Image (cartoon, rainbow, N blue to C red; front, side, top):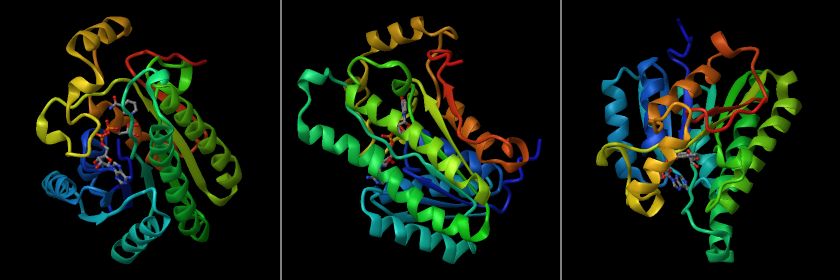
Length: 265
Ligand SMILES: NC(=O)c1ccc[n+]([C@@H]2O[C@H](COP(=O)([O-])OP(=O)(O)OC[C@H]3O[C@@H](n4cnc5c(N)ncnc54)[C@H](O)[C@@H]3O)[C@@H](O)[C@H]2O)c1
């Protein structure tokens, strides 16, 4: 099936690590021109190199902290300058450390809110200027299954990812008339298998601080599909939602890719 993504200009934030890396490689396989906006340039450059080998039209890395509006504006400007426009924005950056809410601090809440929500607002606001002018565009935001039903040890993160889902729906309603589609993908636990799949800023840089091997076994047993997610599983859903050819009539949706952890009717 032709997704029609060849030659499209795609921005992937946090494309240097784990899920973002798989998303970049997925678009690369479709022949897209990719701008990776990541705070960690060296790791993003390694992914860019892999993306070139995987068939990307072209790839550039722009050092970007998504919590800073001026840096996001610079990233979008660079994409437009190099590839003439932007067709797809993937809001992938996210961050958390798992712990019970009673152990968290206001500094931690602020960091979770800045990275997971302010980053999405900054990128969406900036890209809408481009999309509205041309009357077309797709946004896919990476949320989390923690947003859908409450998740112990992910209280602030789950709450703010629920805000991302709601924000995507509102933006979809406000901008459908401008040809803009917006959707969210909710991964469940999705782990890198190899060290080179993550950067030093990744929340998975020390896997055991997120889930001990025993906890991962428990997660696996609780899932209907009895397996932990891989980054490519999420990338496939993102490619689908980014493609006007196959998802041109899909907007305002929240799609779980989590082995059946959440089933929302
Ligand atoms: N991996 C999971 O189990 C899982 C589950 C549910 C949801 N998610 C969501 O999926 C997305 C990707 O998760 P991941 O596991 O690949 O994360 P990760 O921590 O491995 O990678 C995050 C990437 O974002 C970059 N980054 C961090 N802060 C940044 C900032 N302020 N500006 C720009 N770049 C920044 C990092 O350098 C890294 O390349 C996130 O939104 C996360 O919340 C992940």
